[in-house]
Image 1 (cartoon, rainbow, N blue to C red):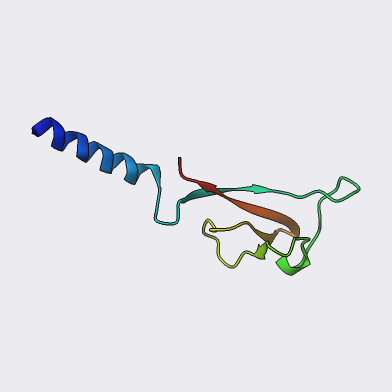
Image 2 (cartoon, rainbow, N blue to C red):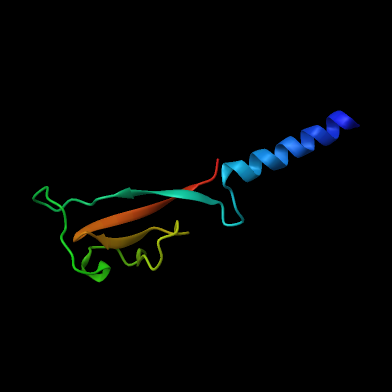
Length: 85
């Protein structure tokens, strides 16, 4: 019985340490999209950045649930959420 309890406790601790949450997003990575000339897209606000109709503008600095774009130091950046493993 004690081994079973220790195993359950270890599983709970491992899940907590992995960063998983109820939306299954554990972080994000950032990419800088390149223009046709190979250079960065420049921006003053995130709305200046190129994006498809399904990609939104990032509204917070936390890991998003869906891909979004932001303007960081006058360069467009795409933020891509990463699923928990």
